[in-house]
Image (cartoon, rainbow over the protein chains, first blue to last red):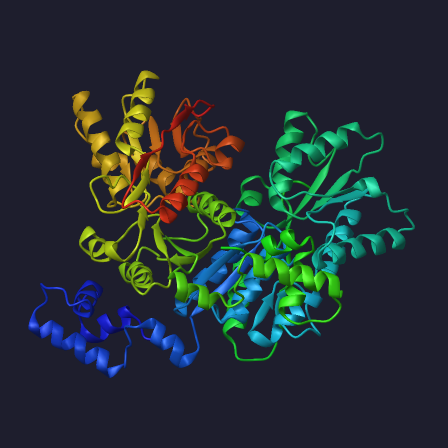
Length: 320
Length: 320
């Protein structure tokens, strides 16, 4: 869609001038006015965006469903999505779901009613039975492995990346490895749990349920983990942590309790967020901005469905 | 507006069940189907949201213009806006402006065309001449002192808060105080510059232009500041830094160059972001989530314009 900036460039005037001409405001020379009108005609610019929608059936709005609006993980994803949206002259409609099914359904209903052109779900709560009801109304794009489904997806192989991290910790001499995760359910969580089970089985170790720490999302959650570790008679010697934020919280809290890192407790985060660099946390880098960009491009693609795996990278620092 | 969740509550069934009835899907008992249909009738729920728009002239969409999508300052503002939106059954349309006038005008045009009910501009680039052209089309809400204008605003008195911070540093024995800021222009930046000028005048000090560091937005910008400090023959002994992110970057870079904080250089941040707590940075707390909530409530108010000042709080830690 041609926008006001393109018109301004074509006419060789400022955007303000274009806006003034469109709105019949004074203080524009006849010469500039003529140039703007010519440019508008040339590229067939419609001021009435609603008319454009009716004509093309497009809103140039892409829905983005995220569970929380100020978690750095989703912040980086939205950054990638928003940058790509700006470059392609789309706007985003943000749905904060708080992981409530009804809010995700509201987003799906906006797709059904053509109020958005496509919907990106950054972390899903609805089951496939509900998603499947809406796939015919427009592109749905997910940030999880959705191969074989009638949606598009950009995903990390969380089974593989968790296995790589567990192997790394094991090779560093750790035999008592636990992990911290956000939700118990969710495709990504289940893949990680499976990798952990298979790893224990391979080493002939029983799976210790108390080595798994759930509901770990934010920096603040690190304190709860450390308190539980202190109370354990046989705590893990290393933790795999599905978010650098939580790893940073654990690291900070360990310092307060004089628990030496990595000697007493090794920490390995995920994402390689800025805080991991600041606090020298060993981590598995997930290029979230790139993932976000890819999600957006899949949303505006005409393909029925496409799937793209993004690979992770081990970043060695000082916490293992 | 009644939503699917309200219907479910009224009918005493799950949201999925409501969705199934609306979409004529199978697997719903006749009893539940009846309950849902009664509930829908009772509250006069329209499935076709577009019809609701045409009837009420409302979209339940609020536009939010931010310069960058992944800066923690704007992340916290959007968190406050998004939480309030969820509670009031509104969705947000996100405009990333990159501080380009044309993108802000696109947002204003969506207000004009009734594609959004109101527009919150978190950091403005357009001049008042442009904003004034759009005030009659719907509520415009700004995050700056806009008293006397035909918009609403939630704001910090940046003149006052900068003055408090300068006094505090001066009382701690600092006579060579510099400051770091994002944009040179912008209402908030100008207020801060004025406070700095008045402070220098009060102390009978000449204003040293090289004590002001511009384009300081992110953690990474801290490195540039430290490099310039090292090259100065008479550097400031204390810095007032308009973002905790930049303060954290300066602190980290000072450690690498063995510049002792606060003995050799005192640092005072703004916002009290999580990183300020983690790195023990003395700062002026701005309750950004509360500011965001207030911006949203002003956007859905029917008042012509309202203005609310939010006060700041000095948090003493270890960098001064």
